[in-house]
Length: 284
Image 1: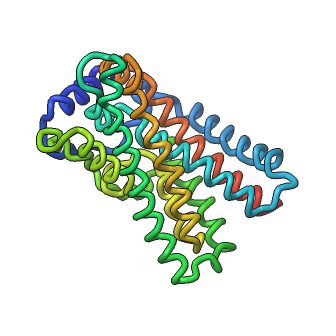
Image 2: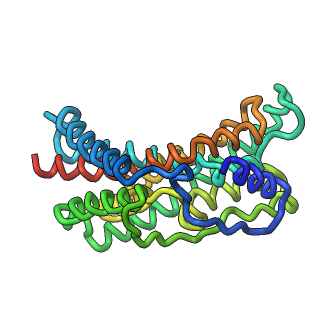
């Protein structure tokens, strides 16, 4: 599995193909028994309920749910890029030449432009969802949307654990890798940041994106919708910072591929735990 991911990343770095289509995340490369996955799912549910009881006790319901949504938004953003497939996009933005203060200084415009692209993507997507939610008055349906959100989180958690299949609509493409042959690197950083920051133009391996989208839409607040996508995109942006370290693409991609299954399990556990945490908060 690690070798496959390394070869895939090497092909992308070589500029093979304009737009790479990627399959759904392949979980459990080393087969896990059904009973072990059931135990992990049950443990995630219990952890969500216990966590809600201890950390949300004495806190207003709205505040507790907002902080939970912010936390899973950050985790979802990090998981969406923290993979061999996700890193294969941002590794194209590496500094030129060897690792030195000069190469880092020359690379800084790319870093800033990439961050600006993510901010612009959050403003565009979050602003649009918040505006639609405000116009339609969707915040008045919050009492109904929160239980549905919790149910959807658990359902997609079961999907990620491999028990059921849930529709997972995605544009299964990556950023256009041939752009690096046509534009300066800082422009590529901006284009990639904006494309990835819109989240639905490229493949995202975690359904936590849907939770963030639903929260933004039903919040009925442009400020909240933009804010939660800024948090999500900040998580997406952080893996680029690996390029500021004296690490090779091969070593990073190899580590990510070896831990891909753990990332999938973490994603599944977060989905189930968050769903049960919201339910526990609503019931208490």
